Image (cartoon, rainbow, N blue to C red; front, top):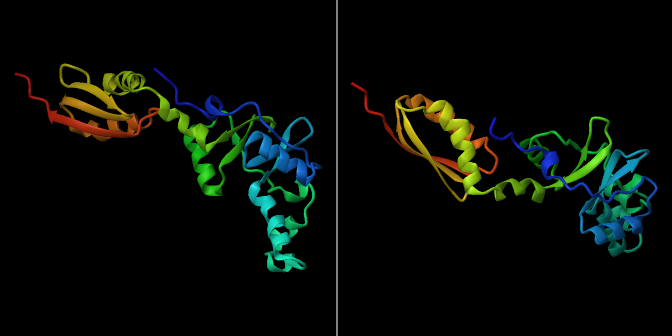
Length: 217
């Protein structure tokens, strides 16, 4: 293949801030501030991810203080427990929602959407932390140049589906939008081309400006 789809390992951040289960509340807040992140993996042993502590896990304590004496009574059962928590183990969400480094970017995006999270710890086959991937990391694929996208679409789609002389098709890409222009003999291949082109990293949309090819002879 001209280019394999990018994986989580291609875009993840490898230098990661993490805490142990016994990390105190203030250390967690300080690390989030220093690293400018909204969540931290909680690891134990050689780096096995056992949970994630996020800003959402920390906020119930602020709500409790704002409510004054007996403030936990105004919080739900889960938030009341977090409001009184002192360590990462007591604060974290567990088991951690993670993704493997070799997972495609679409899978990571789906996991984030399904779980309502902005960052995912990335683990290897051994379950140990290897990095973190964020929503911003997943969007990096759309920074790919139009020329690079066009070359891959020509190589992976046009050369297989629309071979001359029966079809004459060329590819134009503008701001990630792929347009197939020309003449095709077998129009049933058009939706196939659309699906293959959309699978190319960096493609925003696919359009067609095609006409039926003239019959030879």
